[in-house]
Image 1 (cartoon, helix red, strand yellow):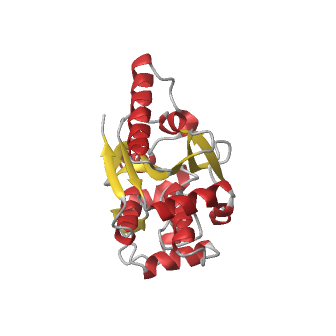
Image 2: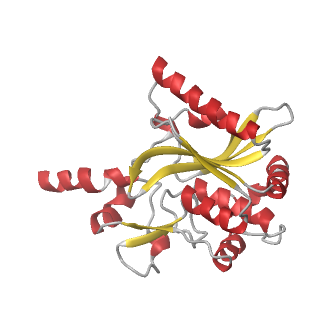
Length: 254
């Protein structure tokens, strides 16, 4: 029994310990300073590039090859304040989804690694996506059930990265896509490449039993039993760069 518990702790829990805004520890003075420093660096970069909107990712400890675990859409409101629209799981019910407009510092508050990946898309995308966010048009692409490891090709579950990708597709397609399924099909046609990550048998078996925001039933058609395909901040930004070579990407480090 002890051996089973040890294997569980070593092999299962790390996969899904990607951080939660529901369980953040109080920040020390030094940590708070680092959050505000990172916030300032990101805003300075956006302002120096005369940006109105950008894709902003925050970093966590690398897990299965993924380090940037949360993605949002940062945009400047009418008062000149930077707001980050992002999708999060509900703290009371981890299955449910909610979209939030957070201040930039609040967006970065949960981090323990003070780096950020930032992409400024074309001015056309900035203008159109900002308006779609303000008018709540992208709410139609919010899913019903949250899953950290949602299948990039399925609309059964959703996570923060998929929400940003599908919102981007909505405006990039000329608002021709009307549903999540349409958006996913559009990304496939345009050559989006999700990240492939390895998950062992123990993770696939016990993960959904211990974490309500972990699901594998949307990965039933995977080509390899130990490999799943997920959208990540990096793959989304690579996709945007492919479609918009004029976009600007930078990693802002501590």
